[in-house]
Amino acid sequence: MEYKPLYVEYIIGEPNATVRFIELAGKELGINVKVKFHGCIVDSFLDDKGKWQIKPIPEKIKVEPENKKANKFYIKEIGLDWKSKLQSKVMELFNNRPIDDLPF
Image (cartoon, rainbow, N blue to C red; front, side, top):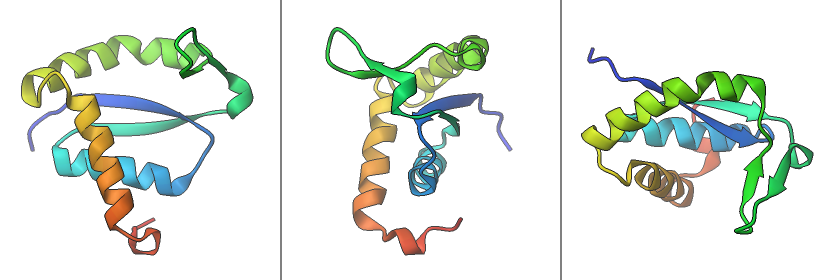
């Protein structure tokens, strides 16, 4: 099996269905992605562009160097827009696959 660096994606809350869609999308695109949960909406804030951001947490700061390596790897392998391709695949799976069909 070819080594692919792990990219850790942080999400707010703990919705199992969202996790499964992200994992399935990553698998289909050849992205080694792991989802970590970060509190709730209280642990986030709106930035100056009106986007929700997660407050900095020590664990996330620790994985940033590895995520940067993974980001460079997937830019070379998939393209500069690999994160948007992952998000698009998540939405495609969400829209085309009933949650009841997801393996949990």
